[in-house]
Length: 350
Image (cartoon, rainbow, N blue to C red; front, side, top):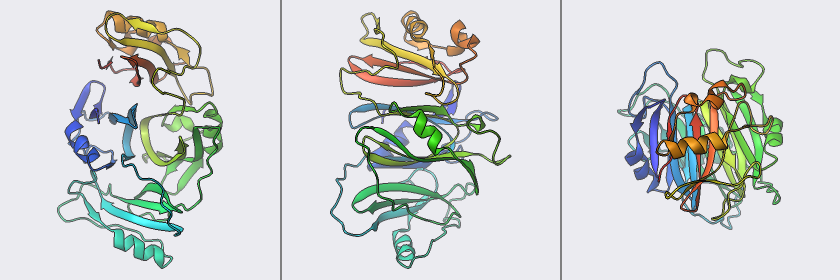
């Protein structure tokens, strides 16, 4: 875990020590909310949890809006030869960061309920913990030997997906299912995101712009998506304001994939090379992104590896640029990616 911070604009709470401690257990699970992450750093503004880490040798950055659920499995568990269709390995119920005081073990309760064919609903306060009903049941389970991890909101009947994973070897990124909404109202986005990710790349900002109209007014909406990345299944929940960026392209050392062919822009004597920078609105892949490689590379060279996007004329005036942008670069030949938002300064690490 390289960095974990919660906030917005240029006001952040550093959560790196807490997330590093969680990562040492091999499993990071947390619900993103100010009440659970050290307080509200800037009242009246939407906040995000920003994570940067290495997973299986790859540099990853995530920007997660409030009410997102982080499920990060760092363990290396090979599939087993279990003959059971469904095997619950462990289950927890609570709030905050898994491993801290806000969770308790409910493995036996979940196993017993599923064996009898019922769909348990876990709810109720925990001793000494009460921050507003932001609790989840997190279940670590196997389906015919395949390891899966899922988070179920408090009060929602637990139902584990036992559908076999159909891996298309020709695609490293596969969207299995996607829906946007809240409570019991959900709009299916599966086909749309499947089409948008045909090139093994998916990017979007989670907001009501994804749908014709607000499905549940006055409620925080979520994007729930199940996808396969390099053959591994992920069940993710993203809150409004999240930047979703899934990249299944080949990022082996020495290789930096690009949306369009171009040469890298080197940063003299620093080991930094900007290979590509682009900005977009809506869903990446549905409309061509705005290529901002040259202007971003120049700004990084002239301003000590830092850019402020809304001060750059091309970004500030572009009708095609709403909120999100992406920089692909290498640092001493290590491929990296950074997400950027229109109103936030970005500094690339050495």
